[in-house]
Image (cartoon, rainbow, N blue to C red; front, side, top):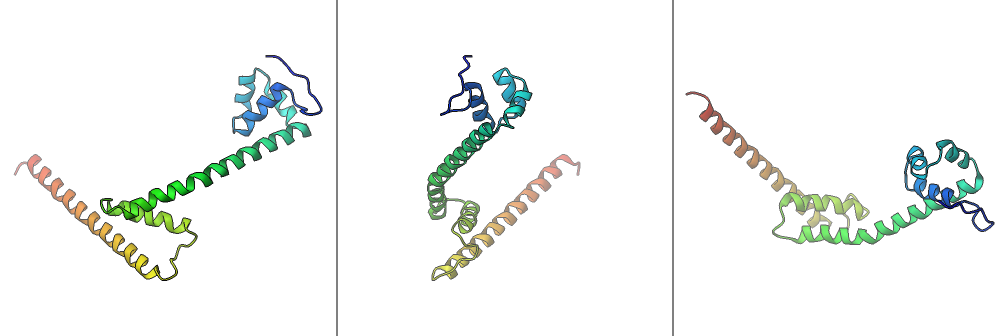
Length: 156
């Protein structure tokens, strides 16, 4: 691997720059040193140099910013998916309830307010009760099935 000399514009060598990229991405020092073929003490020494620390912090900030941008971009798609689940009459009640419970905190309020609040709360309560009824019916069916299977296994 060719080693580039430090310059005023970039005070890091190529290998230091590679270390910065990997460390900023969360790779452990031991893994970085193995991947770059250097001793881990070299990385420790670099982490004491202001130029290296500045480059590492700048790379971490850039990654955090890019991650934030990605989350902001995908947030709208995720909310649309949840809204589609709420509007889908064929969706399971449990899925609609989960979507509603997910959307409310993201919308900035745990407690709905405004003219649609009573209707929304009533809908959520109805979904909650329906889900509970479905769970009870499912449990009853499972118990009945279990009792039937047990009666077949056990001699009468």
